[in-house]
Length: 232
Image (cartoon, rainbow, N blue to C red; front, side, top):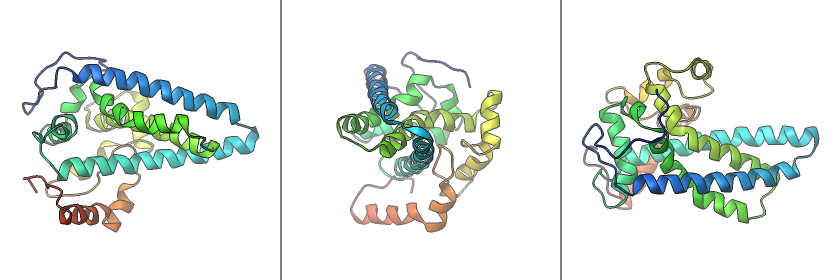
């Protein structure tokens, strides 16, 4: 997957066109979220103390990474199962990119870095803003830093799981299941299959699917009147 930072506005596979202001919004979101992440990171580094602190930070980082995988599944499931590409506001910003990826699974490998990370950055801004203001304990800071980094990288990791070729370092991580790999993600695209929504590492897919987490949530939201996709 070629590393492209920015592509001009264009019509993507499936007919989707990005709004003219969307790239600018994504740039601002990336800049702001990066600044807030650095602020939280500086606060955490100033309180890191000794081997015990480092061990706690590693445990917190793993917790944040797992949480990011679960959240990626929640977002992916919601965008697959509710609303439409043309739904007001949420459609072009959030729903359409996920639906495009089902029509053309390799489409996201042709998107630039900004398009793949911009929405995630936008979602992280309020979370990181609140965290930079709130007096969180060091464990929470470390978990949040790992969560934010993983969330920003999720669509890149997802795209690599669809790519025909990836850099050797990415392939090494995929084969060791440290990030989402093509074999693990193929279940999500199998005909008639609903599940395997988590796309950061894929670690949470087994648990979420065995417990029927997304099916239970879907029944709840439908009962509350949230509009399900016409394709369901």
